[in-house]
Length: 473
Image (tube, rainbow, N blue to C red; front, top):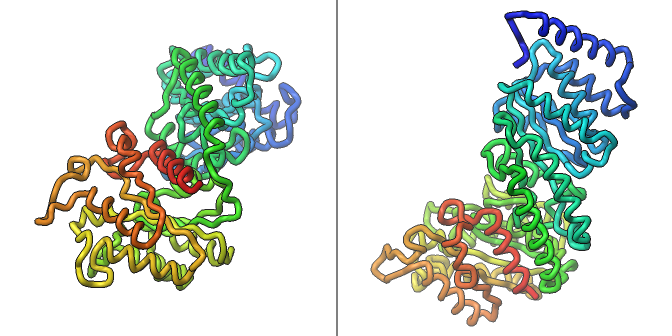
């Protein structure tokens, strides 16, 4: 905080300097030549009241003042764009600090590479460092942004080392500051290896920007210092090379439309980092997420959404019949707008919630009264409505709860594997493709890829998406 009650000569001098700084800005006197947009940001800083300032120098920034209000509970002013350099950032800081009530917190979303490519960089970085040092009670949260893997693939070793060195120089400036937190999510596999996560070269799309914001500024994840940044860049090098090599494994499905119908493994996630989003990125297919958390293959009276509910609404092409609080209504509307009738692929994932609700695997005697009967009925409806389509069944994804799905809750000895085995029987009977993610990706349940014992984290979603894409070849 900058508001003082015990005034001394030093404070008086600082106050005079701050007022002169404001007068210079209002009079049109600039410390350097700046673009119109930078002056507009300065005007916003002067004329608005706020408790936090968010500064970005990215091509596109999707974080809003409402995001900070919703998730951090702080009134925040958002400033900066691709033309904002380190000189501008320093001017923003000192201008905000000159207000009668200065910000309590500063957030940054920074492309460090472009920041360092200006004359007098070391002096400007020292000025930023001095500002942070002179405000020990103020919190500074800096997210360092890097591009996707394609940016690094053809980079020479020398150029790559120069790139890493720029981040080391910047981050090391704040290593000893207790009030400065620096984050570097760029070496996360799910983020780096999915080109669709980026709107521009170094700008996240809206969903990913919010995801990274929640992880960094809210949860404190991906925190780094100059000691481990070299290791993170080594990870970037390795992951980028691996992603480049894997490109040939994925089919080009640009002409295809893939409809994902399932439970929360699909339906709880939207955007480019979801399973449909990953498959779209790797295959160029158009994807639709017709899913709902908690959904079962079995139709349970007064129970959760079933595959029957989803497929019936899909065939009717009626978004209004899709379950609320899911991506399905909007995705159905998009499907109707696109009107695809050829090159359709359906991918179904059910079974986890059937296991958790102790629903029968088969043999209920009713049309939709078990996993097997519910799946068979839905698949036959899809075949009749879209006879030229391809249909794939996923075995239930791995879980770690209930002893990795081996606990038994009925007299038939049913485990999660029972539903996996039934998926194979259905695929053989109905001449379908089955993708056994339960067996092939069993390590997801043991190696830290699940958030709650059931749902995959972002890296888990990425792996499942890659596995589906490869099997569509």
